[in-house]
Length: 398
Length: 143
Image (cartoon, rainbow over all chains, first blue to last red; front, side, top):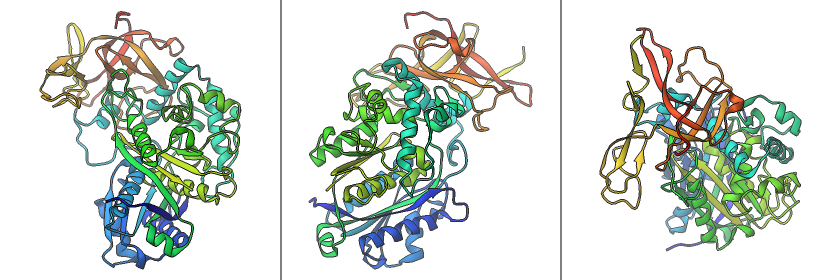
């Protein structure tokens, strides 16, 4: 069986660097806010799905949900802890959704919380130092950082579509402009194209201000059955579709951390994300033109141009023109991209990021995104990518 | 010439004829994999039996970047300075990432013919040259 699922509560801890707040404290802050938004308490929660961190907490075994319930509510809550790297939040959402859609539970929370180590994301412990570990290979053989992978894609776009350095910079400027109105974003100072182009080149053609840094943050949602949504009042938003996917054979994308690709003609680029988006749209019964607001993983300015084209919202190469003519700004065109300010303005708090995207879409659909509201947003979508070729997408509608 | 060792075993071999990247070929669907893999990930392939193979030496630059910041300490290299990394299309459906050298940054171009070679990353405390693979201009346009 499958039954409708509603998002009843959304909550987050602002993004930043929080050295004095342990990861679990950030998680509890987000959950408290989400429960408050839903008008529910811990006594109502039947299931908790945590996007597990590799960096901190979880009793060392990724048991973040168990850690949380042992702090606040020992009442037999079903605890699920999911991996998925930067897509873990979307996988947590999808799991919580399935627990309710199946009829097994009526109130399930999904949470992601992260405090990131400084600098380039390091190789987590527990892997082998040999030819079987791609992450080991990319470091020792060529020192390829994550920005190097994205820069290689950006350079190729310049070749294929004539994208100019100023256009990448403009995408970064748009994110800062959107973030100015968002109290959850970390970087809210407006920027200019000249300022972005004057920031240090990290990996040509990408500058420091065109690449997302890392941050600390947490986000949570409360999903419920129709019966609970009706009984509680509040402001439920229907989950129109959600899906997760892994990659397709022959995908031409530079998949971090691999050092080679087996490329086959006709295979979609970043197929794990495009596949999840396509499936979520199919479940929701909508097409790309129906989406009013998109929250997508902008690890770099390149992603902001490339991904809406992958999802069919823009024609290949069309993003540049839409951006340069101001059509991607909030309220200016058919589709608003990352009204939250995106990863470029948040800094990525890996496992929390996809749930922050869902929170933002929920606030947009309810018309509560003060300072960054997309006028009359009715259909909103998230899209995220995680290590290991994990993709996830959530669609909410009014 | 000091003795040399590969930075990781099983990735490539250096001999009098130059450097060869060590690959796996699926005996059923002919797909090439680098580095070597125990099986075939083509979902249309049923048998998934693989054998050792070597990659072509010559290819063309698919795209590239200049890495301006020093990577984390796991990447050991003597006399670090900004360097180019590229994706090289070797034909046969395989694209390989690697250090690009022997060409000025502003002369790097998509489509440039390159050939795989070996290069020393650093000399270890025992005096061994620790080597990796890299790509330099050359090779044939045919790749």
